[in-house]
Length: 227
Image 1 (cartoon, rainbow, N blue to C red):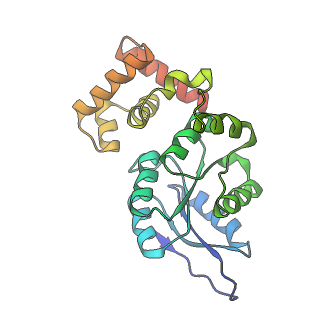
Image 2 (image 1 turned 180 degrees about the vertical axis):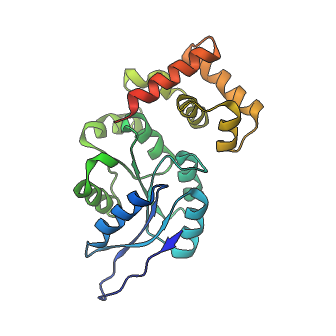
């Protein structure tokens, strides 16, 4: 974890914390944001534990968070922030394709979702939108997500995956990354039997008969979601 000190004029800048496990990504975002007259980086964190300490100590107004952290799944991290620091705004900035992750992130408490390949101009636009109290999503996804929030149906291609609970979705995602039951348990801080129970429920909901078939399904799905 690192803290940034703002030097300069008296204009009040909006305080932002960057949470990402890639130092070069954090550095690039910090340099871009630091060039704005109305924004400042108050600190950086490489994992969820560091981030929660930084939020308590530095008091950011906005957290830029990836959904892939080494010590906790991003959805659980978002929920933790909202439970302990409900006043803090969250903008997810991730490499994962937004079509399903964005809906879950917003339900967990985030106020926006931006893919990393969108570029610096979109990042600043998204930050300012969220700080102004707006939701931020790509134009292509906004309509479908707003429809879901209004009680509409999910897009047909994501209906089965969308039926998973957040915990089941986290397990499914990690299966797609090739992790074993023990590795998933370590990542999500749950016992092996609990992981297996989630895997069973996932197979039932996705109508997948065997564990190897579930792995193939999850890997194929995960691969299709990468940019």
